[in-house]
Amino acid sequence: MTTATPTNPTTFKGNDSALLGIVLAVVTFWLFAQTTMNIGPMMAEDVGMPMSVMNIAISLSALFSGMFIVVLGGLGDKFGRVKIVLLGNIFNIIGSLFIAFAFGDAATPMIILGRILQGLAAGSIMPSTMALLKVYWDGPARQRAVSMWSIGSWGGSGLTAIFGGFMASTVLGWRSIFIICAVVSVISILLMRQIPESAPAAGREGKTDWIGIIAMAVGLAALLIVVTQGSSIGWTSMITWGLFAIFLAAFGVFINNELKVDNPFVDFKLFRNTVFTGATISNFLINGTAGALTVSLWVLQGAADMSAATAGYLTAGYAIFIIAFIRVGEKLLQKFGPRKPMIWGTIIVLVSIALLMATNTLVEQYVILAVIAYSLFGLGLAFYATPSTDAALTNLPDDQAGAGSGIYKMASSLGAAFGVAASAAIFTALSETGLDIVGAAVEFSGRQDNLAVREAGMVGLAFNGLMAIAALISITVFIPKGKKAEGEDKPLAAAPQPGAAAAGTRPEKV
Image (cartoon, rainbow, N blue to C red; front, side, top):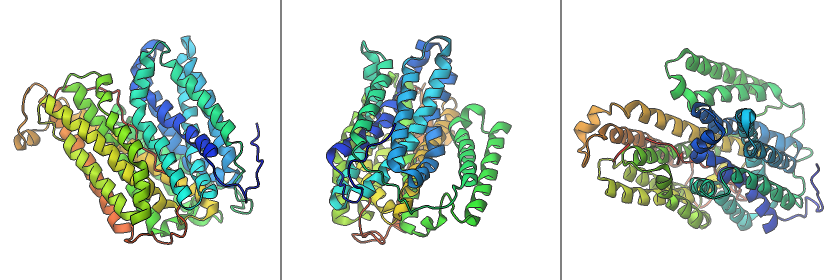
């Protein structure tokens, strides 16, 4: 299958139909594939899959996306970004149909393979679509395009729990989600056929750095398994420590190789730009606060006896405020530069986490606080998204836009995975016993039989607050003051990958 290039790359200007094709490619992951975090138990029961296996299947997409996103971004730089996005859409079509038509004895392997393909699709689509925004959209048009991209990613992730629960409850059933997802990819392919190939023909010459690619893939695979499965495997298990040793060894090989080869897969010179470095670090940390959504939903379900669906509906403000205010973040970027809106957004996220930490209140009070907090969480991320990406990627050379975008998106994936996994591990470890020092320092109103869950929630949310504070520090240290970030001749645009809220997971009473 080939991509049509009816327009000269030097004269083509990004338009709304091409942008719609890009956004549709993005939402195949954030709106559709991520619904498994909410409907996973329903899927497992329907196909007869053990829930422990379904939990692995749910994490596989993030695992493979984070593991290969830099690889696929670099391949887009080398062989063509439109080609790689097309490949991602094809991966998504095949993977989604595997899941939709998973029946009988083949259901488990079909769902697992489908989730792997959906992860590879996300890894293919994210960095190359961001690079295309850099190439074919300029100035304010580019910033608007980034806002639309952000709505597809952040907005999609905010709506995924509600969308998945609603579709699964209709007569169409959960399988319809993945059939529609495949259709959306087909439409994306048709709309993107007008975009010329953008790979710089004379850009990244030389042999492909396969040693660097393989070492990074192995290291990230080991690390992501530790982060996402460590709590179930056991943090003191030899398997966990063995995987961590593999991660250290693989990254030792990777760094040594990248410093020596003539054409490194990841050029460490990118990190000489402190703006790129600081924005990438803050992106990792701010995505890590997705763990706050997970823990708070568990508290609502476990301590307030609320169903997963009802708890998920309380997060509606998260999606509404992201979608409504993403373009406000763009306007703030144009007026103040990236530093101020990034700081304001992070402070708002920190306030939302502080509200969610009030697990010592009565149920009715906590529900009101949660609704306000989820809305503020979406508002903060909306302020942060476009300015952060613009600051991170503006100064990347054109021939490394895909790889640089991949690094930035990898920070998003790893941040969300680490934040959710670490928050869940803290909550799980304390949910049975609580933490005496918290009970001694804070008076918990109402029922006392759920005290351990509420204390666990408060501690898990405090961990997320620390990540938000660290993100704030990285912004103030690395992002310069002034209307333009260092070397910002022409603003780039693309948005950070959101961490998804685990809306379908359960714990016990506020």
